[in-house]
Amino acid sequence: MISFNYETEFKIENEKSFEDWILKTIKSEDKELGEINYIFCDDEYLHKINVDYLNHDTLTDIISFDYSDAHTIAGDIFISVERVKENADEYSVSFDTELKRVMAHGILHYCGYKDKTEEDTKIMRTKEEEKIALFK
Image (cartoon, rainbow, N blue to C red; front, side):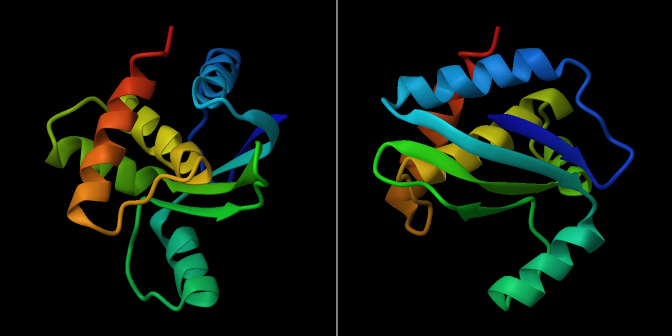
């Protein structure tokens, strides 16, 4: 099950298209869907989670809590809509593209991809682009 939760005024307009895409993304990595919760929020909300749960006093665009097992993807993915907007401007891409990148990023972490090293980040970016292209 995929659910979209909103702690801000932002809303995904066509949740069904996003659900289908996320499921396709998961299946393209040879995984099964468990329960994925996307929580869209603002910087303040996500900053508090970052401080309280991860001891990081910084702003971020995404925090994911992974409850996956070997083949089933599950977790909570918190996304700051404010960060997504700012990143879209910074990287000269549309908000929609940046939102998909961040949404795929959380799923890719659950699939085992990392982004702590330069090489891992390069692989993650390639995978993000591959998954964005799956959106119909």
